[in-house]
Image 1 (cartoon, rainbow, N blue to C red):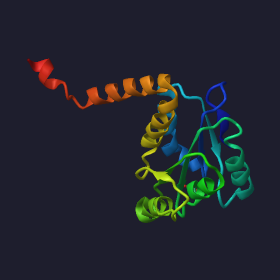
Image 2: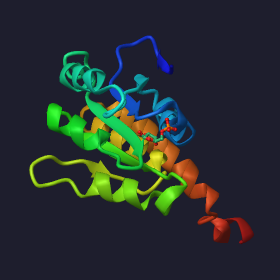
Image 3: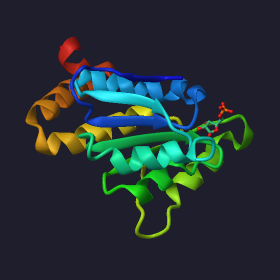
Length: 169
Ligand code: RP5
């Protein structure tokens, strides 16, 4: 079972997923946490296989200093929505692509939350955007996270070669 704190400081972001098999996608989120030096934790919390654990996690996350929850799941992906129903924290949902239906089922079950229980949904398998969005949310309150995220965004911009004209002059 994956369950470890990435940093010794109290986690600010809780990264949860329905199965260990989601980690291949969700590890992109951890990359952003590392770039921005955001303390986070990673746990497998399944809405249907470990429902009690999910309720306990969602209800206690805020008390444990978590400020944003990122939840990834595939198939009939009810984990992000269920967690959002149990906490006042912002929840970002990552639809994980499974072989069947190519991830569309995951996307629709996460994005189509009924009014009143929001999940900020990123694209299929786009765990990196979930990490960036979490960093942006935290950046409102923590300028040092904002600065680190800006540095990362600039380094990514350079990769597309937008400054090529300057180089060939
Ligand atoms: C969901 O079912 C998980 O989030 C995962 O994406 C999917 C398949 O899980 P495994 O059968 O690989 O454990 O609950």
